[in-house]
Length: 406
Length: 168
Image (cartoon, rainbow over all chains, first blue to last red; front, side, top):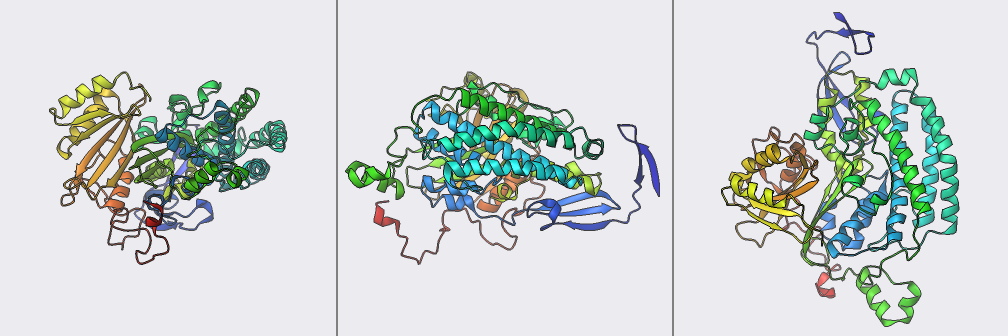
């Protein structure tokens, strides 16, 4: 049996009526369309989803337990592996948390350098998400266009810290070294070419009739429900709430930059896509502003208790040797206290709740992982939609398994 | 360091009314208002903060374990955020080890569902009234709650990683 109805755009849709013949379908744990290891057990009537139940935790690595055993600077590599599409934001967020706990002020130049690195990471993160939405609708070409740009961003990270994906970039108190002339040249080249290549990608998808028909109305969520579910980042903004940590609680001198927080209206896949598209453009603009206004000065704060001295000093001066030893062995004195600090990660408010008892390791560290919190809304968002929309909804929510499972 | 939010005093007053003066409030060094309340007053307090003071956003919910604090070994920490006034508060509830039960916030914030499941999973705290309180990140067969302090991260019989060599 099928009934004929009309959707919002006035197109005719035929809908199979529920005939009580419900099948159970396993989507995942390893399925190419889920882009990560998570399982959804779907109850489907024909193509239509009646109910979904999620199982998560397949790559749980007990980061919060590990963190209770590691000195503060050894926790940075753990944060890499949360949202591995934008590791530098996680790293720098962690360093900002420790700096808040220890009351460290960093020079303006460090703020600007961090902003550049974090915005590059945001671009990389959003590029993956948006191009994969294209892939899931069957448009593979756009993906190949922007993955070249992502590659260039990874080359930039490599120039700063030597690593590409799990970057372990930045230190408590600043950067391990200043931006090199090669980095500046590569970044200038990247900024020059990026907009043109990104526009090509934009032309392939954004106003593409087939793409629009596929994504408009897929997996919507209202602003009220999104707030109730503690959504954050582009997913919350797509629902129409202009909450951005960079604007509400500026860190790293974000108040110095002029940028727009794009918001959507319906909270559907198209709005999430559009919000990310515009955020990429805003990020490019922020990087350009930061480069233009880059202050002079040192690339780290004068905090010998936390920031490693230059290696040649370690061989020559006793104080440097002592500091080096204390930092490497995790013997730096750190105040007792309790802080919550959050940054705007690729997926929204990435928070760190840190309790220190003055010991060499945190007493308690809890990561507020935006993915973990908003992914629980997924069954509600895909209820009554068709299976192919459920796939799109998942990729447009940008659920990253590493951040989900911690 | 950071200054307190201008609305702090009105929230402190509201807390005193909602909990019949039984909650203690203090401002920490970072300008965050900390509220220590009890399981009896938790729902009333959070409901009041949500309905009358704009704390519509549950930022974070987690547990922690302090084994040496007799009678209050466990605590649940809530971070609420008023997005309009940009005001954050931290609410905590102490729980004794022999009675780890606390009312759920799922009816107030849908997002509390998984956060409470995570807290249950790692600390064994029972959220009364939770619709689906089962393990989330660890496997269902596990018979302990791994973030409790009595479970050492590494094999305790190992002696090559002894911290006492370095003073702490």
